[in-house]
Length: 120
Length: 400
Image 1 (tube, chains in turn cyan, orange):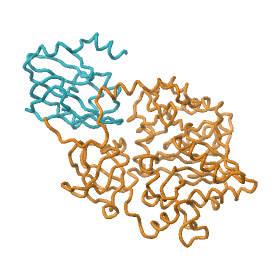
Image 2 (cartoon, chains in turn cyan, orange):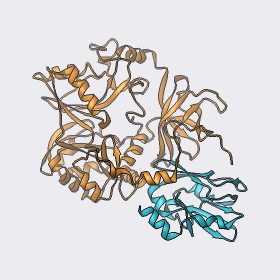
Image 3 (cartoon, helix red, strand yellow):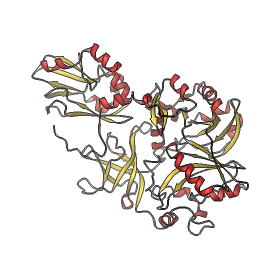
Image 4 (cartoon, chains in turn yellow, brown):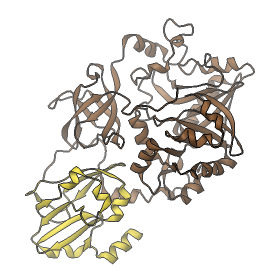
């Protein structure tokens, strides 16, 4: 499992990365009330704002952590945005990205580094 | 992926929001209310608000706090607001003097009663909104925290020396709101049940002299309690010890007042919006309107009274987005999907937990203000359908 400074978690399986937000981010955002997901099949470039997430507090974007193609999105979150708070690091993943270069994940933090990052 | 973006306010990234959540405690300039220590002990997330460190939420979170207030009772610390006493040898003089600043019938306000009002400026805009209570030998007014200094200066300039203007900074202000508020407070003082909406009384509660009004800003029945700072934490703990009462932060206070259709100063009303545009004409009693015995005589009365008679060019309305996307402050409103120029703008918006859907308020041109009018709000470059809705979104629980 890898983590970004944007508080995303990245779970690589073969050439597909599943992306969600961390429990820490979900807690800080507060109750999530709206999720907008990208289209399946969309080609995305790293740092594209591909998910909109709104909590009771404010709107924020989730960026594409890598270049790739969106191969699946978690439609359940559109109907039940609150799931992001219930199980952010499990069932409430946002999208799956098919990537060409798995080594691109290397630069991201491992769990220990992420824990240190949020402790700052 | 390309997305046309016309940001009306900076859209934030998760990182910024998460970081922002940790920022609140660093600013040493911020003031603290007498309940600061209690908030921290209760696990509040403290944020800067109007110059104070205030609890935005507790561990339960905004949504749960909102729902608890509508179902049972919530305790709010509103000590940051300005409590001011206006006193003259002849109390009626203080009332008439205050009338030179507000378009409200203050002189006709009976002893033991409270009334909502607003300071106007020469252009007929609103400088602040306030509560005015007749407490017999003096008037007690409560103003917004962010406007406190300006309001004091305004009152001192206009009213002194005939009327003394005294900021009461030795008292905290608590609000107990929700359908269970009466039963909770009655355990401390049973006669509280006899108070009607907007009654004010001095009552001994939990051993302290409290100035109590049956009012609030959530759309629920409830009480606002001015208590000596030294007794504030004891009173708050006594109220919180009741199983029906939870502490509630500013986050839920905002969604509660939004669902209740109540204006937030600096957002839904400001120095440019007139009370008539804002739909607050009900707070301008007939005696202060054209033809009344004390018509006008407040700043900007020409514009305000003309708008009472002729109607304003734009109006504050409720807005119910069709979809799930919240329409927040700053969202531009259009009469039809491809329209070039907006006919209005959202001034408050978010998710309404009681409604279970996004809700908003904003200003639209009067010709588009009828309930059920279909409009479009531009969210992240997309024009999304939204309907003009009746305010308030929730039925008030006031005990009249």
